[in-house]
Length: 310
Image (cartoon, rainbow, N blue to C red; front, side, top):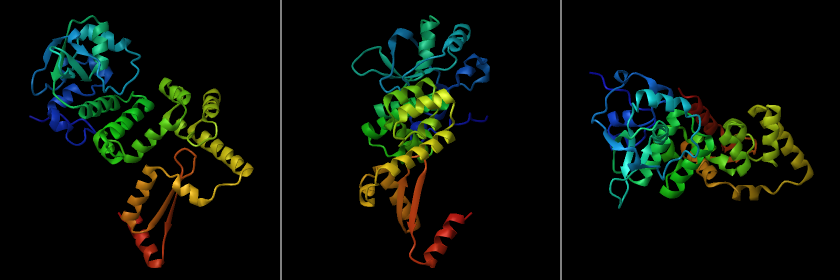
């Protein structure tokens, strides 16, 4: 009997925390699959409990801030019930109270469908695991806004001291993706709201980082339907005009203003290649300039060999 496939990107320790079958049952079922026939789904290793819906409460570590477009899911729940259990953890100090870790959208749909009980999988876990699993569920659904995703990554970094490398392994995303997503939080709040509403894509928004007036440019992108490439070009023109009107600062100041992430990347490159590296973000979306100090042709040959190795 073949085992069900593991969910993508569960990272270190999370499959072991719940068991692969229960992770598959409790985390990240696509919304459109709620209406599938029950027989088509692998059964969890242990049958889920059924709890009164009033004993469940929204999760404190939930990364999602908006719950929209739920009409189809509510209709599915009315017709078929909840085909996937909700992952919950006990609330410390309260009897018969459980906090949702994964499945809050389904819980809200069940309330609107006027269900009295819902299937759950109960697990005891800390805040870090709860936040990680909440991120994983929403990322696998592919409808978490880039800003909510960025806030989730920042919480893992600030509250639990995880590096971007740790986060990338946990959620199954590349480290550059995590870094570039977090950079969206440098944009003004009004621009972040545009991303949340879907008026602006994450790619367009990344092109606004470092632009002199990102809010004006964001509104222009919406009004004129500019692509990310259009915004990068316009950002370059604005930067050129800014440089033309003011003398650039000395190069020594640029180095001191580098972020910790940029310095960490430089260190990784230096350790991998054995060369002095200088990485500069050019203020045009994700465009960067990498300079390597090569002493002689022997070092150059070594770098070429490593970069072209297959």
